[in-house]
Image (cartoon, rainbow over all chains, first blue to last red; front, side, top):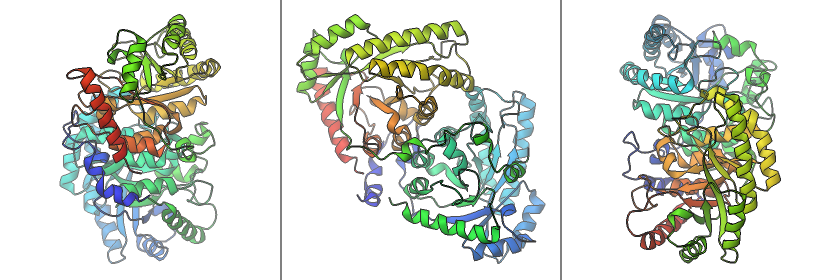
Length: 295
Length: 295
């Protein structure tokens, strides 16, 4: 079986010259990968030992990583972080914001949420970051039921997406397991929201920890995410370092290869043992899983 | 909520704590196809010209079809239909029931819905059918919001699934486009419900017409459906015969091949022109699409 060949030749025919309700092609089916996928290992900065961002970056690079994911920082901190990392070779991946209310039943709270998200996008732009991860509602937050919340999001996000594009970055929707956030649990659902927003600034991510709970197929989920996928979180089944339990990454990595994934895969997890020893082991494990993911 | 703090402090993870993961591998990923996929062309009986079921079967077989999908029939009609098709070589695919309320806010209506579904399963068993397709709520029907409705379904369906197994058939969940039924729109979502029901009698189907509207990847959707997929509806983008507009089936058929699909692909669509001429053309088109779907 030569899947490379079929990616080159046969995806072209899928839905050719068609038009969705939205006037486009089914995104993932219509586009063949522009390039061969790459495994760009990365980590949340809090996971990496080091007294400064620079020291963290140096450790990460030594272990084969290439980027750092930061938290909810503002424009000033973004400028500073960029300066601290200058010359290290480490990029700034996503900014992982927490809760920003966008599906609150109260319209005024949603309006404020949009403002907060725009501020986050300004910081992400300043940092040269790939995007802002935010959660429109955890289970304990007030929220509209799914169908209504989806409509509200698809109404609000396109303008935010345009703002993101102006800032040189993007919004990243993150499906979480329903124990944390019932609103958005599967990658295919997030992808359908991205498609309906019709904005280059509205994209999504996937998290191997949540995917283990919610998805029936890692590869299927990433194929559905397709061109909208611009960040990936890495964690084992127990939310420790990849390789610290039985969680396999092969099926998911096959999906990333199929879609020609170009962005970061970033640790968001705990660690059993000494990070200075265990993270390099985990990166080696991930590289070997990537190799096993034949397409 | 500071998500990063949460991740750091929660080694077990909210999903596992909530009892969400069944402790196994994601279903589709864990199973290799047991056999090479087959294209078993089939049609709803109302789509095929003929004065009797037997005559319809004879036409269908002449054109390369192998099964008929029937409507909401009872046990007596099921016995009769089976008899009428005896010796023709045509099998009885799914029974396509309409609305059976299972996510109604009124518990008594749900209880009656379960009884109706069981009656349908008895008829399906008698007919030797692959399963009962039903819709728990169209948009105009009273219904619980998604998260609550899903919980109710996952509560009710396992017992119904056991009943289906006893009848020698199964329940088939059908994702529809949100213009018809907002409750269940994507195959990955239906698959996650099937997984959570943990019953061999609870499975699902996919419909190329609805998938064109809702899915971002036909192949991704079928990979996610995996072992739960036991029926497929065929229709073009405009819900006519496959081949009567630009809708491609290649990406979806690739998905069916990847999961080793063994069940029927059945016409549920209109027809531009004379069915006696157009259906054989459509079947030839589908066979050629199947061939193009290299894996």
